[in-house]
Amino acid sequence: MSEYLTISETAKLLNKSTKTLRRWDEEGKLSAVREPMSNYRVYRKKDVETLFADFLQTDVRETISNFVAPENEYKVLELFAGAGGLAVGMEKAGLKCVALNEIDKHACATLRNNRPKWNVLEGDIKNFIFSEYYNQVDVVTGGFPCQAFSYAGKRLGFEDARGTLFYEFARVIKEVNPPICIGENVKGLLNHDNGKTLQGMISILDEIGYNVVPVQVLKAINYKVPQKRERLILVGIRKDIDLKYEYPKPYKKIYNLSDALKKGELFESNVHKSSGAKYPESKKSVLDLVPPKGYWRDLPIDIQKDFMGASFYLGGGKTGMARRIGWDEPCLTLTCSPAQKQTERCHPDETRPFTVREYARIQTFPDDWQFSGPMAQQYKQIGNAVPVNLGREVGYSIIKFLNDYYKVK
Ligand SMILES: C[S@@+](CC[C@H](N)C(=O)[O-])C[C@H]1O[C@@H](n2cnc3c(N)ncnc32)[C@H](O)[C@@H]1O
Image (cartoon, rainbow, N blue to C red; front, side, top):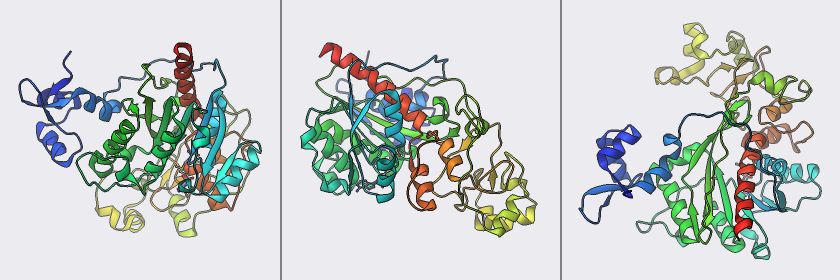
């Protein structure tokens, strides 16, 4: 099979016009190359698949379970650990966290309070050297904050990325040499700097000895999370390993807000009372008028104009503004601050944001996982996290890969 796609084949596959593809080529989002025999402009199949795997993904199938039992004790080094959403998920899957790095003191306190035996390395990643873990760790994971690169040449090299947190992520992988590494990020990374940032990350991982598996954006609702959150997953496999990594398969069953806050399949009891933020009176009086599953368009027109300000005239759906969640739908993506302007997610029955414990439930943190620091910091830690149940499913996929790796090693 040819490793190239013609321009019209690519346009058809991605459902885009050839004009859009030409623009993407100019912007560096998806670069065309010359086919060596014919000298026609074509696309590398691998580039199209790597950047658009999510787009090309087929429908959700019925999955019974992604569970795989670890055949050895597998060790994780978790970077940018936050309050431990991904770490707890991986622990639930059966992986062992040997060390976690995090700069934020409240998030570190959360990790230590809940898991006194975890080795929490508090501080800026730049100040830590991880070479003591060389060949001692099976997977390095991390949700590195996304930053733009500055480009000297056409292809971004490892050293060019110095000063960014992705550089630090790659530097640690280089120091530790794990068979597999996993980065997680927001979906927006796909289009960040017209796709060049992601391309740069892929070329850096390639340079340090890792093949990147076609990138996918996983929808949390397909992984037993009652929230419409999406996470981009970047998987690197050390180049000496000739094994396929498979993403966790999506489940068909979708959980709703009632599954998060009430006794049911996800939790054994109704959510416990806890502290929570309040809306200012001006916002509350507006949200009082919005029904469950409703948003700003459900308000009288004069209040719409007043509440939305300039946004009223800007067009677009803005379905997250003045939004009240319904019991029978998954929650919209939680943000780092629950009363944040323009991303209201109001409780279905009461006119207030979700409490800290409700937030934690929607992110599928277990009820006994306590968050440290002032209330705003607790919300931030929860809002920043990978949903625990999504982390667990990603954990199973790592275990499956490592079981295969140690069989053939
Ligand atoms: C998106 S959050 C990670 C969430 C985490 N994966 C979870 O599931 O809970 C990114 C984290 O990177 C941390 N961070 C940012 N800059 C850092 C640095 N220079 N060194 C270490 N951690 C850093 C932030 O404090 C934040 O907690």
